Image (cartoon, rainbow, N blue to C red):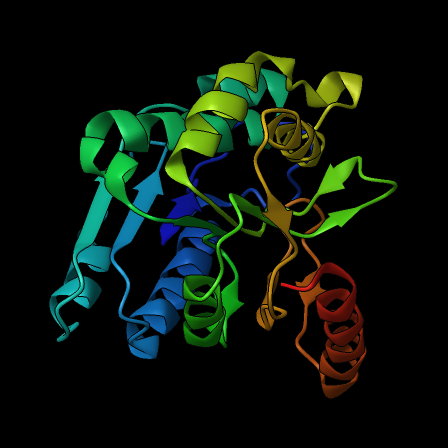
Length: 238
Protein backbone atom coordinates (compact mmCIF):
# COMPACT_ATOMS: atom_id res chain seq x y z
CA UNK A 1 0.00 0.00 0.00
CA UNK A 2 1.51 3.30 -1.12
CA UNK A 3 -0.03 6.23 0.76
CA UNK A 4 0.63 9.63 -0.82
CA UNK A 5 0.66 12.82 1.24
CA UNK A 6 1.41 16.54 1.03
CA UNK A 7 1.28 18.42 4.34
CA UNK A 8 2.23 21.84 2.97
CA UNK A 9 0.64 22.29 -0.46
CA UNK A 10 2.07 25.82 -0.81
CA UNK A 11 0.65 27.56 -3.86
CA UNK A 12 -0.58 24.41 -5.56
CA UNK A 13 -3.58 25.38 -7.72
CA UNK A 14 -7.06 24.01 -7.08
CA UNK A 15 -6.35 23.13 -3.43
CA UNK A 16 -8.81 24.82 -1.06
CA UNK A 17 -7.85 22.81 2.03
CA UNK A 18 -4.38 24.28 2.29
CA UNK A 19 -3.66 24.74 6.01
CA UNK A 20 -0.61 22.50 6.65
CA UNK A 21 -1.62 21.57 10.21
CA UNK A 22 -5.17 20.65 9.18
CA UNK A 23 -3.82 18.57 6.34
CA UNK A 24 -1.32 16.84 8.63
CA UNK A 25 -4.09 15.88 11.04
CA UNK A 26 -6.18 14.53 8.15
CA UNK A 27 -3.29 12.32 7.12
CA UNK A 28 -2.56 11.23 10.67
CA UNK A 29 -6.17 10.20 11.28
CA UNK A 30 -6.22 8.20 8.05
CA UNK A 31 -2.84 6.64 8.82
CA UNK A 32 -4.09 5.47 12.21
CA UNK A 33 -6.98 3.74 10.47
CA UNK A 34 -4.63 1.94 8.08
CA UNK A 35 -2.63 0.78 11.09
CA UNK A 36 -5.76 -0.48 12.85
CA UNK A 37 -7.00 -2.48 9.86
CA UNK A 38 -4.20 -5.06 10.00
CA UNK A 39 -4.54 -5.68 6.27
CA UNK A 40 -1.34 -7.76 6.17
CA UNK A 41 0.26 -5.58 3.54
CA UNK A 42 3.54 -3.68 3.51
CA UNK A 43 2.94 0.07 3.73
CA UNK A 44 4.87 3.02 2.32
CA UNK A 45 3.83 6.49 3.49
CA UNK A 46 5.36 9.01 1.09
CA UNK A 47 5.17 12.75 1.82
CA UNK A 48 6.52 15.37 -0.59
CA UNK A 49 6.80 18.66 1.32
CA UNK A 50 9.79 17.60 3.43
CA UNK A 51 7.67 17.39 6.58
CA UNK A 52 8.49 15.99 10.01
CA UNK A 53 6.99 12.49 10.26
CA UNK A 54 7.81 11.85 13.92
CA UNK A 55 4.15 11.58 14.98
CA UNK A 56 3.58 9.02 12.23
CA UNK A 57 6.61 7.04 13.37
CA UNK A 58 5.12 6.92 16.87
CA UNK A 59 1.89 5.47 15.48
CA UNK A 60 3.79 2.98 13.32
CA UNK A 61 5.89 1.86 16.31
CA UNK A 62 2.72 0.69 18.06
CA UNK A 63 1.75 -1.44 15.07
CA UNK A 64 2.32 -5.02 16.09
CA UNK A 65 2.06 -7.27 13.03
CA UNK A 66 4.75 -8.44 10.63
CA UNK A 67 4.11 -5.89 7.87
CA UNK A 68 6.91 -3.59 6.81
CA UNK A 69 6.13 0.09 7.33
CA UNK A 70 8.27 2.72 5.64
CA UNK A 71 7.83 6.46 6.08
CA UNK A 72 9.63 8.78 3.69
CA UNK A 73 9.51 12.53 3.20
CA UNK A 74 11.31 14.64 0.61
CA UNK A 75 11.19 18.09 -0.97
CA UNK A 76 9.30 17.33 -4.16
CA UNK A 77 6.30 19.64 -4.36
CA UNK A 78 7.71 22.43 -6.53
CA UNK A 79 6.32 20.97 -9.75
CA UNK A 80 2.89 20.57 -8.18
CA UNK A 81 2.81 24.28 -7.36
CA UNK A 82 3.25 24.98 -11.06
CA UNK A 83 1.19 22.21 -12.67
CA UNK A 84 -1.18 20.94 -9.99
CA UNK A 85 -1.38 18.30 -7.28
CA UNK A 86 -1.43 15.41 -9.76
CA UNK A 87 2.08 16.32 -10.81
CA UNK A 88 3.13 15.90 -7.18
CA UNK A 89 1.39 12.52 -6.99
CA UNK A 90 3.45 11.21 -9.90
CA UNK A 91 6.59 12.68 -8.36
CA UNK A 92 5.90 10.68 -5.20
CA UNK A 93 5.53 7.50 -7.24
CA UNK A 94 8.81 8.21 -8.99
CA UNK A 95 10.59 8.94 -5.69
CA UNK A 96 9.21 5.82 -4.01
CA UNK A 97 10.41 3.55 -6.83
CA UNK A 98 13.83 5.25 -6.84
CA UNK A 99 14.22 5.17 -3.05
CA UNK A 100 12.84 1.67 -2.47
CA UNK A 101 13.94 -0.39 -5.49
CA UNK A 102 12.31 -3.55 -4.14
CA UNK A 103 8.91 -2.01 -4.88
CA UNK A 104 9.52 -3.20 -8.43
CA UNK A 105 9.29 -6.78 -7.19
CA UNK A 106 5.84 -6.52 -5.62
CA UNK A 107 2.89 -8.17 -7.33
CA UNK A 108 0.73 -5.07 -6.88
CA UNK A 109 1.16 -1.51 -5.69
CA UNK A 110 -2.09 -0.17 -4.24
CA UNK A 111 -1.88 3.63 -4.37
CA UNK A 112 -4.26 5.46 -2.04
CA UNK A 113 -4.80 9.14 -1.34
CA UNK A 114 -3.56 9.53 2.20
CA UNK A 115 -6.11 11.98 3.56
CA UNK A 116 -9.10 9.62 3.29
CA UNK A 117 -9.98 7.05 5.94
CA UNK A 118 -10.63 3.85 3.99
CA UNK A 119 -12.81 1.95 6.45
CA UNK A 120 -12.74 -1.31 4.49
CA UNK A 121 -9.15 -1.05 3.30
CA UNK A 122 -8.44 -4.59 4.49
CA UNK A 123 -11.29 -5.96 2.36
CA UNK A 124 -10.14 -3.95 -0.67
CA UNK A 125 -6.61 -5.33 -0.33
CA UNK A 126 -7.83 -8.90 0.12
CA UNK A 127 -10.03 -8.73 -2.96
CA UNK A 128 -7.21 -7.25 -5.05
CA UNK A 129 -4.96 -10.14 -3.99
CA UNK A 130 -7.36 -12.47 -5.81
CA UNK A 131 -7.14 -10.58 -9.10
CA UNK A 132 -4.78 -10.83 -12.05
CA UNK A 133 -5.34 -7.66 -14.12
CA UNK A 134 -2.32 -5.45 -14.77
CA UNK A 135 -4.21 -2.25 -13.87
CA UNK A 136 -7.16 -2.06 -11.48
CA UNK A 137 -9.06 1.22 -11.27
CA UNK A 138 -12.47 2.73 -11.81
CA UNK A 139 -12.87 4.56 -15.10
CA UNK A 140 -15.50 7.18 -15.97
CA UNK A 141 -16.47 9.88 -18.48
CA UNK A 142 -16.29 7.79 -21.65
CA UNK A 143 -12.95 6.21 -20.65
CA UNK A 144 -11.25 9.59 -20.15
CA UNK A 145 -11.19 9.78 -16.32
CA UNK A 146 -9.48 7.22 -14.10
CA UNK A 147 -10.20 7.49 -10.36
CA UNK A 148 -6.83 7.77 -8.60
CA UNK A 149 -8.00 7.88 -4.99
CA UNK A 150 -7.60 4.09 -4.87
CA UNK A 151 -5.86 2.34 -7.74
CA UNK A 152 -3.81 -0.84 -8.02
CA UNK A 153 -1.20 -1.63 -10.65
CA UNK A 154 1.63 -4.00 -11.29
CA UNK A 155 4.87 -2.03 -10.86
CA UNK A 156 5.86 -2.27 -14.51
CA UNK A 157 2.61 -0.56 -15.51
CA UNK A 158 3.45 2.57 -13.51
CA UNK A 159 7.07 2.50 -14.66
CA UNK A 160 6.23 2.11 -18.35
CA UNK A 161 2.84 3.76 -18.87
CA UNK A 162 2.31 6.34 -16.11
CA UNK A 163 5.42 7.91 -14.58
CA UNK A 164 7.18 8.68 -17.92
CA UNK A 165 4.18 10.78 -18.98
CA UNK A 166 4.23 13.08 -15.96
CA UNK A 167 4.86 16.18 -18.08
CA UNK A 168 1.49 15.75 -19.80
CA UNK A 169 -0.07 16.94 -16.53
CA UNK A 170 -0.99 20.59 -16.23
CA UNK A 171 -4.09 21.58 -14.29
CA UNK A 172 -3.81 25.14 -15.63
CA UNK A 173 -4.63 23.60 -19.04
CA UNK A 174 -7.26 21.23 -17.69
CA UNK A 175 -5.13 18.07 -17.79
CA UNK A 176 -5.36 16.39 -14.39
CA UNK A 177 -4.03 13.16 -12.96
CA UNK A 178 -7.33 11.38 -13.61
CA UNK A 179 -6.86 12.05 -17.32
CA UNK A 180 -3.34 10.67 -17.11
CA UNK A 181 -4.60 7.52 -15.37
CA UNK A 182 -7.12 6.95 -18.17
CA UNK A 183 -4.33 7.35 -20.72
CA UNK A 184 -2.26 4.88 -18.70
CA UNK A 185 -5.13 2.41 -19.07
CA UNK A 186 -5.21 2.90 -22.85
CA UNK A 187 -1.45 2.46 -23.13
CA UNK A 188 -1.63 -0.68 -21.01
CA UNK A 189 -4.24 -2.22 -23.28
CA UNK A 190 -2.38 -1.23 -26.44
CA UNK A 191 0.70 -2.99 -25.05
CA UNK A 192 -1.30 -6.19 -24.54
CA UNK A 193 -2.00 -5.72 -20.84
CA UNK A 194 -5.25 -6.12 -18.96
CA UNK A 195 -7.58 -3.96 -16.88
CA UNK A 196 -10.38 -4.42 -14.34
CA UNK A 197 -12.43 -2.06 -12.19
CA UNK A 198 -11.95 -2.14 -8.44
CA UNK A 199 -13.47 -5.36 -7.07
CA UNK A 200 -15.27 -3.51 -4.27
CA UNK A 201 -15.98 0.08 -3.33
CA UNK A 202 -13.58 1.76 -0.87
CA UNK A 203 -15.72 3.17 1.93
CA UNK A 204 -14.06 6.51 2.54
CA UNK A 205 -14.54 9.36 4.99
CA UNK A 206 -12.59 12.57 4.83
CA UNK A 207 -12.46 16.11 3.52
CA UNK A 208 -11.73 16.93 -0.10
CA UNK A 209 -8.44 18.73 -0.52
CA UNK A 210 -9.62 20.31 -3.74
CA UNK A 211 -12.90 21.67 -2.39
CA UNK A 212 -12.50 21.55 1.42
CA UNK A 213 -15.86 19.78 1.66
CA UNK A 214 -16.69 16.54 3.53
CA UNK A 215 -16.83 13.19 1.79
CA UNK A 216 -19.02 10.88 3.83
CA UNK A 217 -19.54 7.15 3.76
CA UNK A 218 -23.33 6.54 3.97
CA UNK A 219 -25.59 3.49 3.75
CA UNK A 220 -27.20 4.87 0.59
CA UNK A 221 -23.78 5.31 -1.03
CA UNK A 222 -22.84 1.73 -0.11
CA UNK A 223 -26.10 0.39 -1.53
CA UNK A 224 -25.74 2.22 -4.85
CA UNK A 225 -22.10 1.24 -5.17
CA UNK A 226 -22.91 -2.39 -4.36
CA UNK A 227 -25.39 -2.55 -7.23
CA UNK A 228 -22.84 -0.99 -9.58
CA UNK A 229 -20.13 -3.47 -8.56
CA UNK A 230 -22.40 -6.47 -9.06
CA UNK A 231 -23.23 -5.32 -12.58
CA UNK A 232 -19.56 -4.58 -13.33
CA UNK A 233 -18.39 -7.98 -12.07
CA UNK A 234 -20.97 -9.70 -14.29
CA UNK A 235 -20.01 -7.65 -17.36
CA UNK A 236 -16.23 -7.79 -16.96
CA UNK A 237 -16.01 -11.23 -15.32
CA UNK A 238 -13.34 -10.21 -12.81
